[in-house]
Image (cartoon, rainbow, N blue to C red; front, side):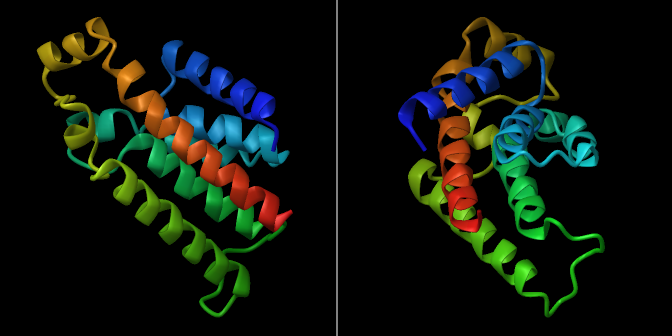
Length: 158
């Protein structure tokens, strides 16, 4: 993938997050449009995943969105839920592990609160997060990494 393409995808995701979409929603939307696969139900799966379920004490939304995307990517063009012995399922599991392990190695944690310092259940924390634009210094980096890794995986699967 060309750097210009990656930059355009990154810019679209940043705009989606700035417009109020959750990290998971933005990640899924840009990856699915890049992969020309659009199971809209996956977008709904990500819709409620904001601020790590409004506490920050669970998985980073961008990482969550990336893992959902990888499952969808490896499952296409499936019409049924994956069976345990399905090779596509095994590849999905492996790719999610690589993404998760790489994220953890690069950023030191996968927990939203640990990564951003924001307790999403605390209005003052959330106000500070937006006022100080923490997402620009932190979340955009996570988004960039996850999207790049998922696009690389997409090239291998294609």
